[in-house]
Length: 67
Figure (cartoon, rainbow, N blue to C red):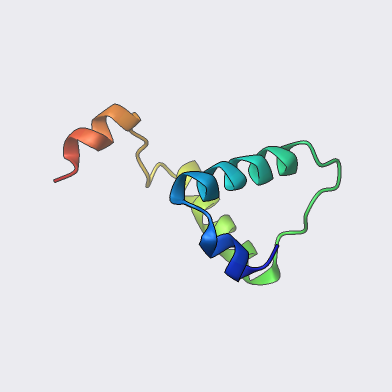
């Protein structure tokens, strides 16, 4: 399937294809390597979590805060 074929699908069909692809990736036994450029970002996020510099909120609270 190429991009032209994908663009012919309805939005609903494209979302369904995406769901199938994500589901198939969940069951892959092969682990993907984290790209080198992404490692410092993940390390910084992990550091912020460990030092309490981030706060997690429930999705319901986040939705209330959205304009």
